Length: 75
Image (cartoon, one colour):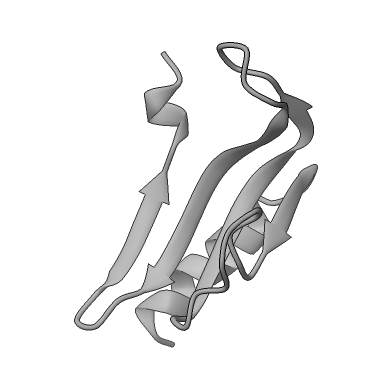
C-alpha cells in the first residue's frame, strides 16, 4: 500500500461528520492526486464571508506525500 493510500485510509476513517473531497473547495482542481477534509458548518472569521473550515488534506507531490493539518493554526 502506498503512503498516499495509507494516509487516505486514515482521513476516510476519521471523516465521520466532515466533508471529504478530492479537490479544494472554492478553488481550482489540482492535477495532483489529493484528498481534503472540511467541516460541514460554514464559519465567518474576521468579517469575511462564511466558508467551510479546512481541517486536513493530503496531496501527492513529486517526491513525497504532503500532509496538511490546519487545526494547529486555530489557536
